[in-house]
Length: 256
Ligand code: SF4
Image 1 (spheres, rainbow, N blue to C red):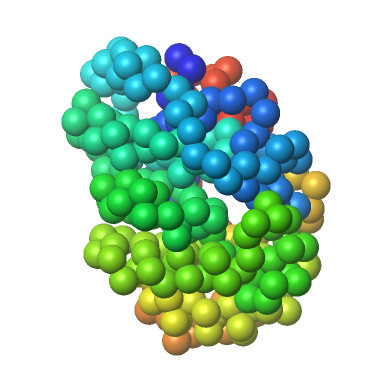
Image 2: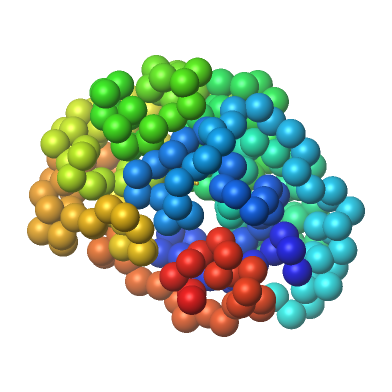
């Protein structure tokens, strides 16, 4: 299988079957986050394109539909899933064949694009990244394509929240470079009004050290006015056996 991987244990979604609509050799993303477990982004891309033929994805889904045991299907993999211009069609296809709720992990870089927004409206859960409250921290942590600013991300999230009535979670990755922004980020989260805030730190292998449990506990206190806040340290993960180990390792190197 080339486009479907896992299921993998997710602290946010239980048993998560991965769908990679990019399936490229080199990570393709508008960001180059310093904590990315897939390594450096060689070419930052903001142009949407069709990476895979959905007839091939359909064939894979038909092959596994009777044996897969998962809580949801998650669009994520070798880059930013909203770069795929057939995302909306793919969501419909996955729902029809697997009858699973569909989640999207996005860095929110393209949320101001109406086509992206319309595609995401079809998902049951959108988990959007927000790692900074100030432009200089955004540039340091997410290293975005030159065309993008933090204001674009914030405006995109506000617009999306106004139109998306299903579950929106904000994922905030905290490391040394942005931990002092926690109070400001809590204010931003409050203004965006997600259904949930997920406080994360990079526990998977990457070039940046995670924050300690004590540091994350201090950050959590800043979010006391938000209605639901979870942290990576407070979560449990289900035990799963991936259907296809090689493809899973390519997207999730910790399975090596
Ligand atoms: S947005 Fe995700 S895939 Fe892109 S560089 Fe950041 S962590 Fe990696």
